[in-house]
Length: 168
Image (tube, rainbow, N blue to C red; front, top):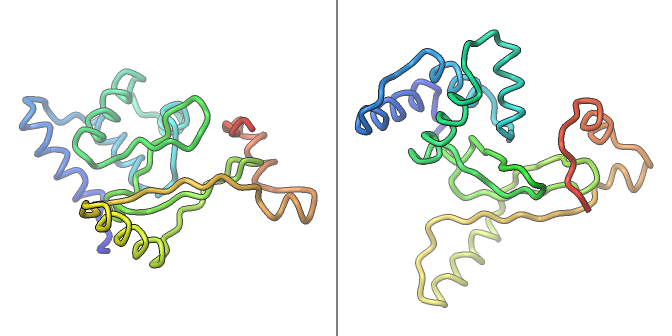
C-alpha cells in the first residue's frame, strides 16, 4: 500500500476538525507530527514523555483531545496489546489489516502480515455470510532470545525505560 505522509495525515485531520467546527493549532500539529514520524506503538503516557522532550507547549489535555480526534477521524487506532493502558497504532492508515505478535517476557511488539491469514480470513468470513473489511490478530508469545540465551536486550531496555511489560 502507498505510504501516507504526515502532510496527508494533517490534511485529512484538518478537514475533519473543520467539519467539527474546531480550529488547527500548533500544539495539535506538533502532536500529529510526533505520532506519525515513526511507526511505533505508544501509550498516551509514552507520547506525553516524547512531547515534553521536544519542548512543545502541548498539555496533557491537548494530547488526549488530539488522540480522541485522530481515533474518531480513523487516522489512529486504539489496540489491545494487553496490560491496563490503551495502546495506539499509527500504522493502520498505511495498513488497515495487520497483526501483532507481543512478547509476554519483554513487551516487544512485532507487526506482521501473512497472505495465508488473509486467505483464511476471506474464506471464513464469506462462509459465514460476511465480507471481510479488515482484520487484526494479536498473538502473545515468549521470545526465543530469552529462552535460548537467558537474556533479552529488549527486556533490559523495557525495564530501563520504565516501559510497561505485559503481566503474565
